Amino acid sequence: MDLFVIVATKGRPDATAVLMHQLFQQTLPPAHVVVVGSEAADVEGLADLPYVGAGRLTVFTAAVGASVQRNAGLDWLASHAKGKTAGDWVVVFFDDDFRPRTDWLENCARAFQADPHLMGASGQVLADGVTSQVISETDAQRYLGAELPALPHAWSGATARQVPDLYGCNMAYRGSFASRERLDANLPFYSWLEDVDYSCRAARHGSLRYLPDCQGVHLGSPSGRTSGVRFGYSQVANPFYLYRKGSVPLAKCRRVLLRNVASNVTKTVLFNRTRDYPGRLFGNLLAAFDILRMKSHPKRILDL
Image 1 (cartoon, rainbow, N blue to C red):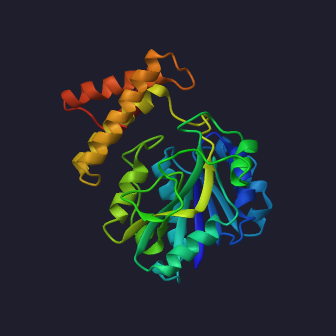
Image 2 (cartoon, rainbow, N blue to C red):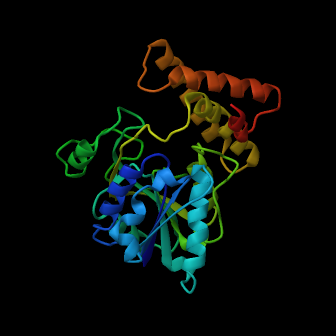
């Protein structure tokens, strides 16, 4: 089974280069990797990597936005995976600051080969800089080598299990779904919850699973991310949009929305400045006001 990898990157060419080296050192190397930036600076130096000359890595740019860039990667794949049966290949989306263990792709391929009804999967996150402090490259390798104990996380545990949606920093889909479906381009920039929307749609065609043997670390690097106000707006507007769209259940949208607003309030009051929580809270309020005015839409952040 061939595994293709798509990496949408913004403002982190050095981090992306580290991921490229790790991907081609996997016990099961990817059939091909596609890196999509939003401008030349995002992919600076990547075209000089030896994997490009070897025909194993393609680097290009598209319009900005995680969904748009990932879709550009899927479009490239659709034109280059011709002749392959859609059910016999898998596309893996990695964030540019995700660090997979060397057997991530091999374990993923094994799971998809064993279960023809498996439509999507995410692996075990040993540590996540998004939910804690930003993780260094050195510490990431220490987590991967079990020198540091794994941190508590929603995507943890030693047993595989069915899940309702997937985690976007490391998620894989069978080609029969990914060849015909695209991520929602109405979710601009950071595309908050695009992973939930896409995976919930995939769940209509098969099962989604947490794979504990596909282990990795999410650095949570702040560079390249959208502003606090824009991100805060997305934290409220995007779940409301996805609920109205009908792709994500109301309970999930409500839970995600309330959890993030509560976190922004708490961390603003406690003067936590590891991230722009006051900006996020202000964005939350702007989106709530727009909902009341019936003017809420994810693309409103383009005007903020």
